[in-house]
Amino acid sequence: MPGERILVVEDEEGMREFLKILLGKEGYQVVASDNGEDALRRFKDENFHVVITDIKMPGMDGMQVLTAVKEIDFAIPVIIMTGHASMETAIEAVNKGAFAYLLKQARNDEIKQLVKKAIEVRTLRRENRLLKQQLRKDHRHRPIIGKSEKIRQVFSLVDKVAETDSTILIHGESGTGKELVAREIHCNSSRAKGQFVSINCGALPETLLESELFGHVRGSFTGAVRDKEGLLAVAKGGTFFLDEVGETSPAIQVKLLRVIQFKEFERVGGMETIKTNVRIIVATHKNLEEQIKEGLFREDLYYRINVFPIYMPPLRERKDDIMLLADYFLEKIAKENNKEISRISTPAIEMLTRYHWPGNIRELENCIERAVLLCNDNVIRSEHMPPSLQIIKKDETVAKRSLTEIIENKERELIIDALKKFDGKQRKTAKELGISERILGYKIKKYNIHPKYI
Image 1: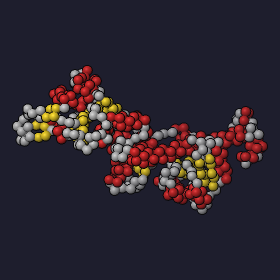
Image 2: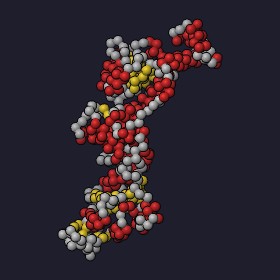
Image 3: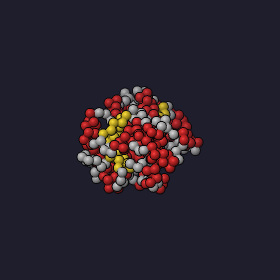
Image 4: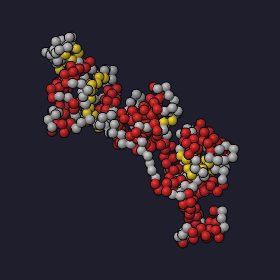
């Protein structure tokens, strides 16, 4: 937003003054320095949001300014500016942490947009850092990470239902973190000292699932050589989480209904009724109402488990959380693999935020793990991303624009801005631009500048 402070480091007076005027009109506070040493002193003593530095300067050059600034504040965006494009220097600048590599011939709008984007990224990084600190402070061991409105709604529901003993249905796509929500509810409930026991109903065949849930007695089926206690008994006094409840058979659904309704069950092959004191949380990625219509899920069980529904939104509906989650996984996975990786590059960030994440948080975690394993230095780059994220942006308009056209467009915009500033007075405009009135008149005709500016 207007008011942010920008440090411009440029030894060429004309370009330095041009940036002061251009960015000053956008509401930014621009501090300009003609050398790297002076700029660095200012940076240490004052607060800035973006640094723009020329790459070729006497004494301390732009690369040295970049390195020194990053040592003081790694999060601040530094834009490297040059009059001569070079692939080698561009790569070097990005590798050293530059936010962008800007040609001096760029159009005014391109410069303004780049600065705006840099400030937005800095703000996002700062918010993420503060939010992670706040999460650690406020939510203790809460494993659910996010700041978006939708995930805040989940936090609110968790806080409201945790202290009750109500049965909960968590629904949402695979990989959205439904089990994390269940664990959070358990940890914040009066049952926190008890066991949290979970089972994926879709991962086991019916006979094995039934035995795991309710237990069995010796000889009840081939291979039952001894009595076995079921997980519902193990979870007594705690919380029992059934993931993918929509995958259960009608026979098991009948038994689950009895557990929820009467808090009792029998082991497979047994006659003894076992009482259980357990809180039930179930989850599914399926539409249970549609399954009821198709005769695949019991309606009475649905109404028993749907006492307090919680919807876990997919990652594509939580765009604000993508980088917070990515940073969390980066820190966690890098530590597990004994790697020192400090950040994710801007192009890689753009890939992460543009992607639609059909596999949700689980897919994002896998993506970051792959990137960490491929990374050989301290920065995750776009080439470390999986093929599904490798989107090449092509800007045909910029590609076709000739150098002459870039310079002329910039010159025309500069003249118009100066004419507006001095209410069309050509003498003052010419003086401001450092040219004669005759040259200014020639330029006005050449660029067909409208009389309203004169």
